[in-house]
Figure: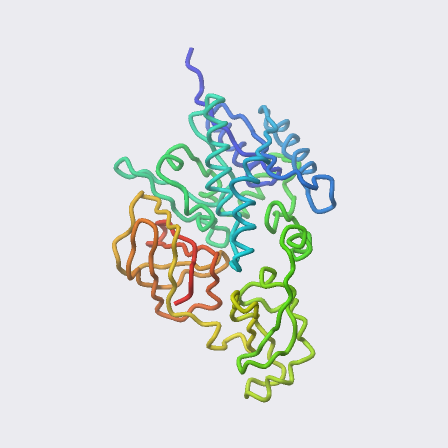
Length: 368
């Protein structure tokens, strides 16, 4: 008997993974759905939608006609993703847990589980593509540039990409929605999830408060004047405008020629002196960086690219910025930008592109 090759699809309860499963079944794969539970500390709270998402994923599996398994990766997530997330925040950096979750859970723990189920491949609803060239695998941007998620996938390696499919990466989001409605999927109109998976829609500072101790200190302007008090440096990120508690002090900006109505932004975090530095105006020089250093590098091909002209993103919702890879080693690199970049933030990912090809990236250690 010729058995169909098996693909295990990560069904999240969302429309992208649902259409992914449908497309693969239509292509003739033996499709099995897996719902990943990655967080359970407060699963019954108003902010955690895990149970609701599983009900949606199960309803999708029923309509498509595939099996679904509920798998708990909460212990792995806590060890490999959340612990690192807290370490980074306590060090004053702003990590991106979705990048780590993809590298450690969705394309490691989940991939391993899928292989045990006899899968040839795994698939997710990410907007990205994989291309094989002369035995090597490239990670490409999704065709819908407004939804491209290659930024979050830049730490994937050759072994992971060789076993991964991204069917909706070939489509536009509008096509995915239309297809879901035509098929009659129960979640065709479900809103896209936002925010970090384990935080959901809850207030971020409220969540961090449970894990990181507060150590209040001064908020200073560029002239060194104390203009307020912060709640602990871990709770702020560079470029932050909301929640600074100094809105009533805007008139100070007029004294430095910045205009009395210009908003305040977090510009620097001095961990040694527990001081938060703020400036007025989105385009203040302290918020501009012409270069950056990154470490903990991960390259899709397995080796660092040659120095030269590329493009990069220093945050997800950002257009590609022209840059030069000035130097690159196995674990660190330096980027120099043609135009200054706004609020380059330690802990975030700097991801390098050559056209539509995502080459990999690293964790920003310092703005240049």
